[in-house]
Image 1 (cartoon, rainbow, N blue to C red):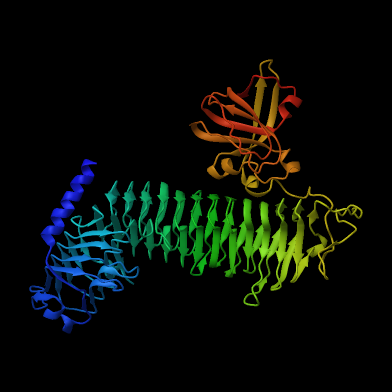
Image 2 (cartoon, rainbow, N blue to C red; image 1 turned 90 degrees about the horizontal axis):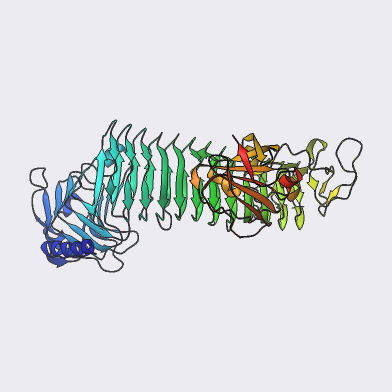
Length: 623
């Protein structure tokens, strides 16, 4: 409270000190417009005697975009001792310097405005002792080359009371634990930004640089993107627990533009418009990230090539992964849950997308596809309105050449819908399991290529010899049939979805009488694996799976059985192998289960399995 009062007093005194002659906006759009009428009070436009725009209190009326606007000039100038108020236009700013050289802003204030100061395609601007109090972006620098970021902006400037840290031309430096309202690194190489904290400001910008690492950063409630990376190949963003609530409409937690070979890993992206936005950036890797509550978890556009989005957790929001314009993207090993529209959307301008080994549960659409020549394999999609939808496009796009294979489509209203604009898509070896309607195809697609179709839980036909193929086709209406339905689901090569990517180990349990049982377990030691567990797995398959959840430190986590369709016994195991709690969980409930003491592991097996093996409590995990 004392700090707040002191800041308020300082602002009042500063604004009073800066108060000058009131006037309306200033617009100078050429060298010839540096005139007295446009606020110039002295100078000749040379480096030694710059034009001076000094001492004005500029009030911006509703509808006006800028308070002070200088564009397309080469003369030297300085804006000094000015206060700009009321620049509320969402596409404007208190001050705009566009296409200018050798300008300066000193001892000035922008207040009660949407955005503060914009510097666009300009060079050699100096900013000092300037204070930006805004509810949008404080300082925005934009340009098409590194030279457009070559400015001198020191820490005497602030955004919402917090220092601006602006760096140009660094090499091999470490910027450690900056607390700021704005951070920019431009025209630099091999710089590490470590432990930065930017809150209620502009976030971090990296521009026209190479080999930049941003690690351990906390970027919260910034008006622009939390981290905006432009034309900076090889940027690495890692090990940041919170990049959250940034950007508003159109912003992102992390935005990568024209930044090939960048990596985003082990980052928590929460409540942003887009968690991660990859635009026109090739061979970007996003792995082991948590995305929650973003409107779009991952957006890929601009024709990005060979982007990889792997091994992460997506929870909530409207879209999980939205591939808008891309070639050869890979979506693999994700857990996606409670997405309002589509877990993975593959647009018409996407080709050769691969979506595999993901677990998608409790969504409207698992996959929403209009793209072509992709592959959708070994995914588990459960509790969807439509598990895989090739939507109607009214002839605007034709989805062709996709392969849909070995997916488990479970407990959904509809398993698969192929719209009128689809053709030559290959559908085989999928499991349509307890869906109200297995499939509809009103396009021209290929079912059962090479004589092998799909398995349907309600199929009544019999096998023909040893082929595993049923004797009665499955009719979808019209002329579309699966001519070679499979009579058993046992062809599936392993657990479906994300579970199929988990490592397998053998554990030994021992009871008080020395009886031992060996169990082959899948090891869930990542956030996404511990979250998804057995969610969405058909009961018949889940019965055969023992799952060992493992943490690096002692935890007090509470486990629920939402979307788990069989009852479980759970052993909570301490670091020394002792069992500190045992719980039985009913199928598909929100009831939390835990242990009275911290634990390091949790073993989940179908209810009654250990009793059937003759194991009596207490039991322990043998090292």
